[in-house]
Image (cartoon, rainbow, N blue to C red):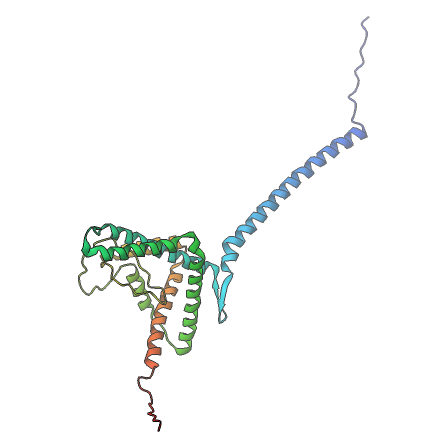
Length: 267
């Protein structure tokens, strides 16, 4: 007779092993949620830092003139515009220098002037000149805001069509040219008549070839992209330059041309 085997029922987990399994599972859940929380915290900190640097910080005023703030974003854009203008002048002068014969006595003096201008522009673009350029830009922005407030007090305004025309001329576009323009001897740079006290040019540059309206729009968009500014901001700078001209004209006209004179004689 074969021996009968007895099947044992599967042993149920006792209370102690079950508690250990639950404790391990709970620990795993805590670790997972902890990693997620740390990840969310890191992303939040990085996002806040990016928000502060790219949005909040650039909106903070770098100066306040008569209650009107000058934002960091405007200061940075204006500084980039100045560097762009200086670099374009340097490129233009360098090309122009190559067109002059260094062995020609008739152009030797003029060549020396071109070389001195190139060195001056290189000094402005040097890293050690960044602080002084920034100070110049801030002084210009403050002066422009003072001009706006004084013009508002005097009732001096600038029509928007005048701003548009100055903007077009700054990029070489003239919708109503008076006379045909000769071909240039070198590629002329885009100049920005935005400085309130521009330095006079001892020798005029060769006249540049006028550009089309499409080319004007392309140059404008390219400049706005490089300086990271809006067209409204650029127009405000041009408007400030025009207001300065009108304010100077009004102040000069108010200066009396005659004055009382007294003759004295000592006995």
